[in-house]
Image (cartoon, rainbow over all chains, first blue to last red; front, side, top):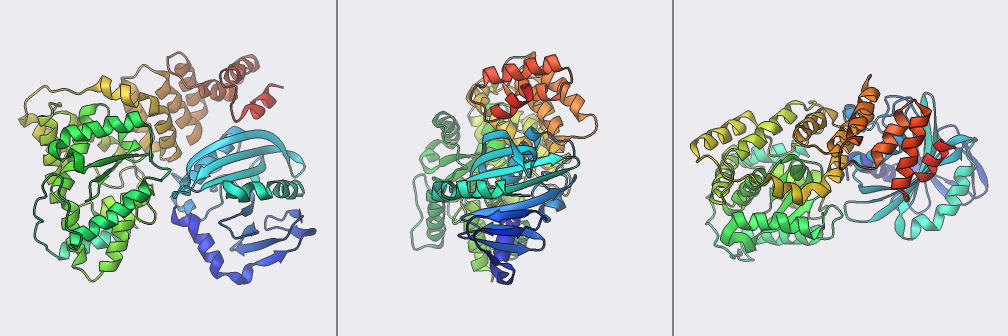
Length: 187
Length: 371
């Protein structure tokens, strides 16, 4: 797995002061400026403007509110990867949903995931507007299978989305309904 | 990692060690020796590699490459185990215990069996001449023994086995001196000739690869993390070809028969690197003598992904050309359908896509476009 994928996680472990508990049934504001209704307790981690939510630790479940990706930015808003602009998966204004799905898959590949497969790409509502729902399956270099759910929309000129990922075995399925409800509450 | 590898190589250059005694076929080093310790670590790495998702497990492809290695290695065949790794990098590496990694990016780039045979023969040369062990002994003599050990073993897979970057780093580390590379080239060339392959094949492969290397953006990640094809190397191989008997077999058809069904997957992986400068040179070369729609489709994919001004039109032209030819991926109907402006044509293309790919993961999205 590439270092820029692990680095924020490693740093998170060292930055305990930026984590806080989001109790169940609480309205919270996430870094992207969106409001969300938590239906279960989550831990919120923040680091230099980026934000993760997790229940059991970021390797076991990770919910990320990406916010706005502007044209020319890395699809994961990754600062380190942005140094390699010529080969990074960069968002472009006017990309179709199909292309955005392709870009996100390339982003996961560039982050070190293997066998990134699209399981589903469908129209969906996101924050009250037309958007998309993308489901992926992928493996780590050690063979641990992950699944990811990405919901978002692209309204010129920016891409907005949130992403949930967890090991396919147990964790992903356990929290999927809860995460879907949480994402549906995004305003 | 590359900086570390460079540092270790420089350190390696400071120490000298005696060349190891050549090993006989089937011989294993004594467990209590330094070489035995290194083999033990590599064996552990190999066990981990066997469960890596990076491994291409197709038995026919593995048998094809393994048989080729056997043919070149002769009596050392039983000492070598070949693993095809699904990574879009031009690379192959040889661990001292006989574990050979062959990357899919190499299989995508070579155009015939003779070109592949040279690269495999080169790797067998590293094994037979025990270059890893020489390198290991040099590194071991430095104060950075533990660092060297962890990087070297991680490089072939222990701990983080299978990661292409790590495997590549091993190749960088073990990536040997210029003299060792030349020795391995000589060994590979002789093995190639003994097996009756065309002497011109290695120079052709490396000359073509040079064009890709030159297209690399300096800041970009290269597909040539190790074994960089230099002008020197291409020139050396050309000189050797001029001195060798003419003729010999290339086995272009045999190579295509064994690898063609993987090409689409490998090309998609190649484009995922988003190093469009290199991929463009590669696609142009590979498509030059290929009548299929597959390469044209992926040329369209390159333009679509790259998104420079004019690329949408270029993608449309490439998809249209692909659809006139055999062996076109069904996704060509979808991609062209999403780009054309004529609504009737768009509907027809997307309909065709859904009919031909009834279980498509993006079915709901495409159906939404047709409403």
